[in-house]
Image 1 (cartoon, helix red, strand yellow):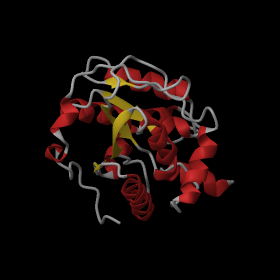
Image 2 (tube, helix red, strand yellow):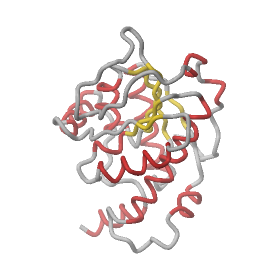
Image 3 (cartoon, one colour):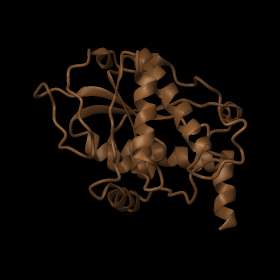
Image 4 (tube, one colour):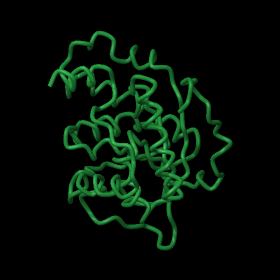
Length: 223
């Protein structure tokens, strides 16, 4: 568990120069159509924003068939720090098991607070959640472009409580005008959520019981 969340801890120099290849493959909707490569025998680099290890387990299994995946853990919404540490450790474990490179970008929770200021009383799955998705995906798109990743995806669409269409709309908007293609997905489809549960049990991953922020935790405690 990390003691703090100092932004920019990992440096871009840690990423292989092979991830600077130009975009070559065609757009497809992951989780809704068979995954394939435009250039046989090659795998494009893809930066995968990972909200947590259980969700990432299924997505890594799926996308690694067609992409050279690097996972990104950037989730300043997760509170308190103890919970953040549990989820980060689970993500590190998953990446060790699967041999997936992992970037960890730490950021003070105060940054997330600024994203959702004025939306504190929004219900779960409301505008506050959309703003949270936007903040995380906007940073992920910026980082993907800076590090030379031609493709970006997120594990957020695994959850049955999250709207894939809303997340995809945000992903497309934050990638617009950048040298990165957002991969639309609905990873909960085709039993994706069930598979994520199976894999998290198989790998003995820590599995949380609330989305991440203090408001979702308060909602859980009220049930």
